[in-house]
Length: 105
Image (tube, rainbow, N blue to C red):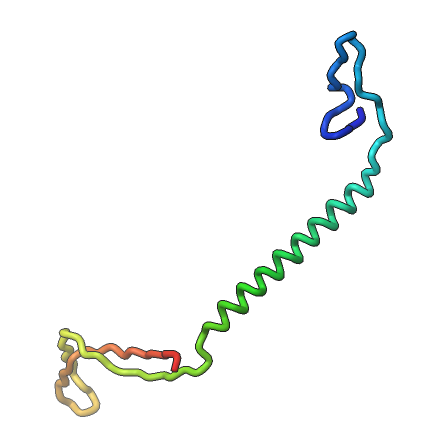
């Protein structure tokens, strides 16, 4: 079975007089076709890698390089009571949450 211009020679259209018009040609070099396919795939991969690297570099160029860190505490509406064994007396205070913030300067 030979391939020629995307059609098999077996599927060649018959001429009006009933004979087939396609002539069998030489079989294509499969190794050459594989090398060409691999070469074009690698070229596309290199192009994709170049595009990806450019996009990543541009995205990271927008990021900050200097940062400022801070923390603060917020009280909640929940009141906590406990007995302090060390001092032998009850203690009480509002519950609180600590928040850490880091921002680009």
